[in-house]
Length: 173
Image (cartoon, rainbow, N blue to C red):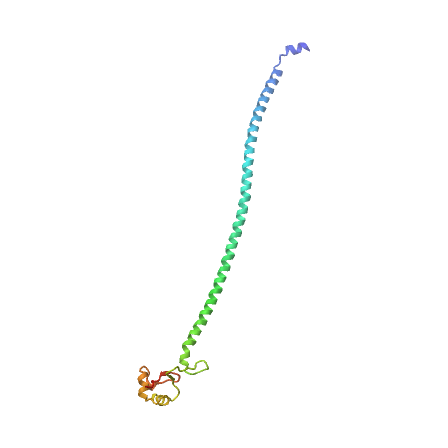
């Protein structure tokens, strides 16, 4: 056998060694590249973790913003309802005030009608009654003439006296 091996100077073992060395070189190169790739992946994992954290925070902020929007909407509706209620109440108050003002304006025109519309004469005044004239009023309140009563009431028409109207009386001299 020894002779066969010598004679068969085959390149097979040398080729095997060369292929092994090339495979070893390619494996080493692949290992270096894989190591660099692992470093890049590790760096990306940190970034992905940061992005996941930001995504979580963004979800929380979004939920808070949605809740705030709902709260603002609810507050807006509540405020509008309050304004509507206040406006209705103000309208009712305005109507009541208008009725009171109209009632106050109507009282002097009542001239003795009703228990609260009675006109009271002050000192030196007289409240006209049905059938009164300046002459009757003057005679009954100090013996004055109708002309004396007319003189102290220049703005009153003696022919248009109204029941409940106040007039001035002349003063005694």
